[in-house]
Image (cartoon, rainbow, N blue to C red; front, top):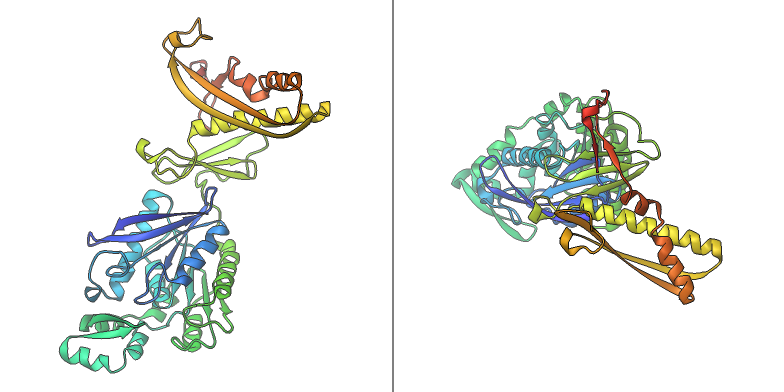
Length: 417
């Protein structure tokens, strides 16, 4: 799993701070996670669930809402509607950079926010709520006597989670104006509701109201003895398992959005770009890899470069060839280490390039052999390295034929390397 910091701007031009968790090899589906009221993206429940989902093949973006964590803006100037707008901005960022999120996950008030945002995001195929209220106005009950002060004075400082937050009258007015159950009734997207029957912050009755308002397909999973913030690691892991299993029914693999064919057959490789950047998802049989360029070359350094993969191909083929040869001979070869580098040098500086002009590609391969081997055996293995199939292909007269999909290759389209 990889984890990286990302930033994007919301509808008001403020910079929001996020973190993107991704599988090591090309995620095919992306999710957007909304944290609870006054929390941040780094609350244990958000980070644990995001990482666990990444381990299960999802790319997950979590971020700080305006005025919270490391995001710009003042919390007192935000409301529930602005949180929904931030979610839409985050989804737009994912769509531009990688792929539109197909799964929305919200914890507590973040759950209410994703239900509202889902209606504005057509790419979303499933929505998950965790301990979410069926009515955002429920938050008033958690503010206690401060509600009267806010109504009378226009604002008040309220301690939430041992931290002071200034809340204005417009925040309460915005909460009261929301009709969440009505939105859920018109959602028409698969919905998964996770809630603890012993939740002391948002009672289980809210889950019942959401479930009754929603149309099928809808599902409910009890979180048993979990607390509202999912402080126990095993509760977060359970949530991730349930979400991943449920989403698999509705959120399909979509890295290859324009290719609906089956997995490439053996000996064939399919490469599809990820979003608008340079990163590429590589499908080789049932295996997934990723290629990218360093940040200095216009990429995001999210995978090895194409030349890195070329060197890896030669290096792995070298190791396999030497292992098979030594095994057939019965030689005591314990370990093989192959180090490779690529460069371009002028033909005049290349002793082995007498007929070449301009610059030529040079691959340097250093082979370290460990084991009880004689000098003759080591020398023979180095000779065998030059006979590995990839080595021979690289030094042969390769022809690369390019044609459009479902089209015929004309003679002018053929090229050679």
